[in-house]
Image (cartoon, rainbow, N blue to C red; front, side, top):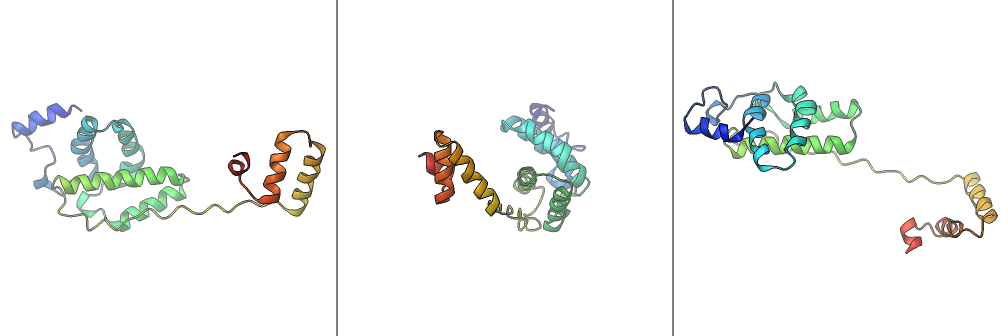
Length: 173
């Protein structure tokens, strides 16, 4: 897709087959193909990643929806689907903010009157990681191993971590 070609088509007013703000009920897939990706290719260094994420993970689920119907509920259901199919939090985060950016471009370019339908959609917070603690038996075994290897600097560092609860960076600094 050549963005310069789209500019020429726009200048010649050959926009009947190309989505325009007057045709605001276009589906997300058409908007992405004819408007967003040419813009991204010209203006974003990460456009190839955008294209890949859109084609493989976003448009198969949301591409058939008219952009005017994409709502917070639809986005949250899509995020739950991604979570249930095993996508990591980081991947879901990336996909979510890409689709929000695409929809905000649609608002900015006049394809949508406002972002009211989707602006309250948010990524759920990342679940906190529960620190793993040693059992009593594991702690005793660790102390025994440390005592066997007292000459090793690592044994001293691990012993300090065990006694103080400090992190590796705290002990080594």
